Length: 357
Picture 1 (cartoon, one colour):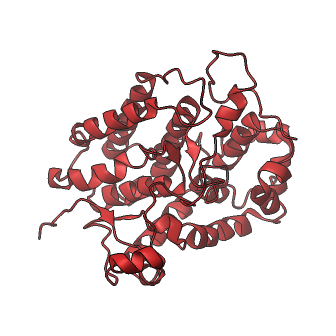
Picture 2 (cartoon, helix red, strand yellow):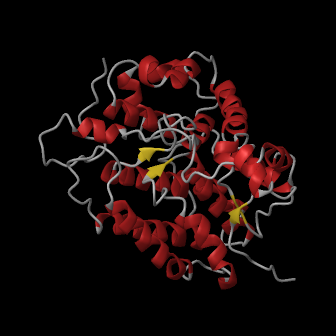
């Protein structure tokens, strides 16, 4: 029987709906998929060789094209502002326009599903209006992977490669976008991400380190170890990225990561990350009010409150992700750029660290 595909849309506006979502089949699909991907990379390095199926190779080519679009869309002169660069909107529009044709090259994809998949895909790169990014957009990318899996573009044999090749490629492209367009952390303090933007690289990254014979969580405080392991493990690569743009101790600018480093084993870090993701991303209305439900990830809970209730109750109407009632905050890239000579554009890993009081 063919699926009646539909363009995903927001459905959750109240705490009652959020509670219903948390006991739904879609919630279980997301959490189960995270656990499956998580289990697929236990003890696996980024540099390990992985079999690459036709589906994985096609997805990687698609992502290469997205990075190419970013390089073809340089930031506009915006010296007067430390906030997001307006050129990001041009990049976003190009992605949205090109997405259907890019999906046409994915092997075995039912083309009737393209509008549903491209909605998740387009909104995985940031918020066009606010020029910000948070774990809600990261969740959109995960949902895109779930859809590709459900539609058999990839199979269970591809799960390890989906994390170490596809998801990690996505994170690398996001670093390009964040440093090029100075994407603001979604919400006042990037509250739903562990490094202002992301959550899942730390979750999957801690899984990679489960059972490691020598490296313990506290090793993130040793710069030499971080540099050495950043090529093989997402977790340490993310720590290296943070250290490249922020000075002082993690205790000051990344207190959650500092607290986690006191945990004795990676097994406990990893299991804690999964619980934290369920509570702080999938369990928070400011994030889930923007979640997109379609035919593959359907909403089956109670209807939204009336317009009167939504204005006086739990409902939010703001655009953006994360703590959507917060004030815009410049990205760490913008802050770092202010310390450089005028006219020099930030380049990502090589940028000068941000000074902290």
